[in-house]
Amino acid sequence: MQTALVVPRLASLGHKVVISAPYSFGGSILEWEGFRVLPSVRDQAGNDVIIQNHEFYEADLTITLCDVFGLLKSAKALPQINIAHWFPVDATPLGEADVTVLREGQGIPIAMSQFGRNVLRAEGADPLYVPHGVDTAVFSPGDKGPYRETVPEIGPDTFVIGICAMNRDPYRKGLHEQMLTFSRFHARHPDSVLALHTAPVANPGLNIPGLAARLGISGAVTFPDQYMYDTGGIGREQLATWYRGLDILSMCSYGEGFGLPLIEAQACGIPVVTTDGSAMPELCGTGWLVSGTPFWSSGNGAWWVRPDVTDIGSAYELAWQAREDGEMPNRQAREFGLLFDADRVFTQFWKPCLAEIEERIR
Image 1 (cartoon, one colour):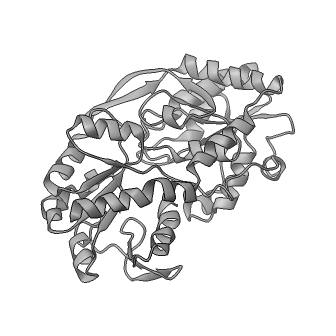
Image 2: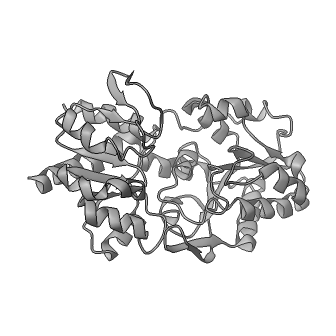
Image 3: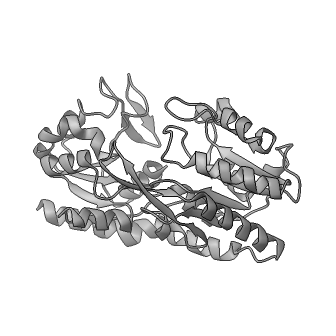
């Protein structure tokens, strides 16, 4: 989604842009909206072709958008090219593999959060800063009915808590904690539903239906159409319709490098509940922050924040009461979301970022 927003705007400045999408597909070159899109070859992260792509197209600059630890295999070769890394930082201190790639590869770091910028500075780097953006014409307030009417478990007065998260890790997205909290909330407020925009079962993720059964909330947990979800058939307009049908979005992760659903939801006028850790508090313009305790991420060699179940429950209750009192801050959520409009982000952050990169390369 970020590539789709940024690339046409880069081209509007007169730049010729080629997209490399090794995580997405392999086998042949594609054309998208007039742009050439390069596939993976043998390495899913593109380590085997990142230098070749740059040289073949005589690029002035390669900008990566991925976890930089994925480029560990090619780190020693990266100083051959002009490269900048727009990447997520979700733990403190900076992950060990990220440090290695930045030091050996000598790329210019671009933080996508203020948290990430601070962590990078603490490591001795001189990062630039560009947040993610959203198309606020698509992600905008609207009628709750179109989504709610498609889900039998949801009535006109049902309190709907949404979670939009990849079920790819057993811990980071905090699904255990949020589902446990919802089970307690549902016992107090039976007319409530947890709407999960994710895959029900994944390895090494969670068996979410199994966890829901153990918690006794199977009848109050919903998922998107799995074929459409798995094949990428749910477009931005459908996702915005889903957001509008919520009362709140819950994103109580252990760590987020940015946390795009927080902005998408608020752009749709939906307040959020999120962890007071990593990039999340700076994206909680309207909603409730949840405290937590340090959690060691062995993969990063750094600390996340594990959200507190009691605090999540208090936030859900405050949100429920706000709706009962007619005081949900929907307008304020929309106003905050507009700060991350893709055009605004490009003008305010990308243009000066590109100018600074050009100066550093020179």
